[in-house]
Length: 281
Length: 351
Image (cartoon, rainbow over all chains, first blue to last red; front, side):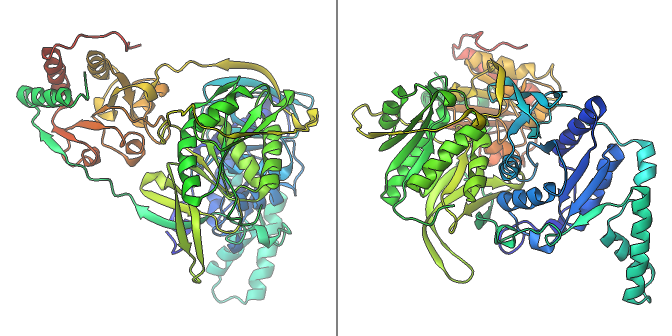
C-alpha cells in the first residue's frame, strides 16, 4: 500500500485478470466465426508485458501497452479516460472488457469506457454472441434473470466468467511471440547486456531491433500519455475524483464467544440456550 | 461534474422493474434518510419508468421528502443510455450533493455511466455510508463528506473513500447490508414531475427476450441459515448441511469455495460476491471464515461455528465456538434438536 492509500502495483505480480481472459476468448471466438482482428490493450506497469504476451500466445493479433508514470493512482474514471484515448487510436467495431477485476471488483471501467467512447454498453455477457452484418445479438445476465438483446455496432461488451472457457496458449504462437517486446523493453535489455555502451549506441541498436521485431509482427506497441494526446487533467491522481480517506485492516468486532464442548451434553445445552433466547422456535 | 454545494440533497435511485420497487432502493431510503438528517438537507428519490407514479407515495412513506418522477414510454424498460441521460439531466438541474444506487445488476450498469458523464467519483459496492470530515495532506479541511466504506483487496482491508472536489458524491451499495425501513403511511412529501425528452436514438439496445430465473432459495428472508464450507469435503457429505437445515426449518447456504467445488448451487452463496444475510441464527459448518464470507454474515444475530481448527477466523465472529469434527458434531446437534421436540420440515430439499 502507498502512503496515500492507493495500491503499490509494483509490489504485486501482474496477472491476467480472470474475466479479461473471458473477454479475450469472446473476441477470439468472434474472430473465428465472423472474421476480424483482435487487438489487446492494457494499461499498467512495464511488467504487464507478460500479460500481453500471454494474450498473443492465446491468439490475439496485436498487443498494446499503455504505460506512463502519470497514470499512477488512477481511479476507475481516470482509467477509463486513458483507455478511451488509446481505443480512439484504433479502428474498432467491438470493445470487449472483463466484467470486473478481481482486486477492485468494481465493474465500473467497462461502462465508463463505453460512455467516454459514446457507444452503447452491453454488460454481463454470458453466452457467445451472434453477428449478422452490423447487428450483434447477445445474451446477458440481468440480475434475477437474463435478456437477449440486439444492437448495432460499434458496441462495448463486458464479459462474465460464465460466457465461455478461455482457450489455452498455442505452442505455435508461443514460438512466434516468445521474443515479443516493447521498445522500452528492448532498450532495457540492451543496456543490461552492454553496460559499457554509450546511450546513443544503445538507442540506435534498440531502434534497429525494434524494426526487426516489427517486421516479424512481434513488436508490442507502447504508448504513453503524450502519444495519446491525453488531457492530463483527467489522468492519474488529478483525474481521479475518488480519494482514499482511510484504510483499516479488518479488525473483527470481537464478540463474547462461548466455547461449547462437541459432546451430546454440550450441544444440548447450546440448543437449550438458543431456544430460551428465542433464536430458534 | 457539479461544484461542491452544501445545500444539495441526498438522492436515492429508486430502481423499479415492471412497476415494482426493488428491495435495495428501499433499504437505501433508510440510510439516505439518516445521511440527509445529519446534513440537514432533504432526501430525494429518483423514480424513472412508465406509469410508475403509484410508487412515488410509497417512497415518501419510506422516508423521501421529494420524489423526482420521470415518466416516459421509452423509460418502461431499463437501458443504460436512456436512464443515464435522464438521471444526468436531473443532476445538472438540481445539483444533489450525494447520489446512491443499489449495487444491483442495474445499479452497477447505470452508476458508472452516470459517473463518467458527470466526471464525478463513484465507489462500488459499499457496505456502509457515513458522514465525516477529511483533512488533506496539505492541511485543507473538508467537512461533512460522504464516507464510502467498502471492503477492498480480497476484503482484508476496509477502505473509506471520499470525493471532495468533484460532486455529486456517488456510491453503489450492496444489496441487503442496510436494514429495511418500516413505512410510515402518515409521512408527507412532494412529487416533482419531470418532463422527459427522449428519442429512439437514445435507446440503442433492443430487448428481444427477457426471462426471470427464480432463485432456488431466498436467503435474505431466511430466519435460520445453515452454511457449509469446503470443509464438508464432498457434495455427498454436504448432505449434512441440508439435514441440519431441514430439522431447524432453515435454509442451506455455502461459501464461495464450497460452491466452486460444486457442492451446491450458486444461489446459495453467502458473502461478498453472494448474498448478504442477517438471520437470527447462522450456523457455519466447516467454514474457515475468510473475510469475504464474514462480510456477508457477520451481522447475524447469533452465530454458531463448527470447525476442527481452533484458530479458524470464523470463531472471531462466532457466539458459540464448537471445536470438533463436523461429521460427528452435526449429527449430534441434529439429535439434540430433535430431542427438544423439533419436527423435521421439508422446506429445504436437496437436489
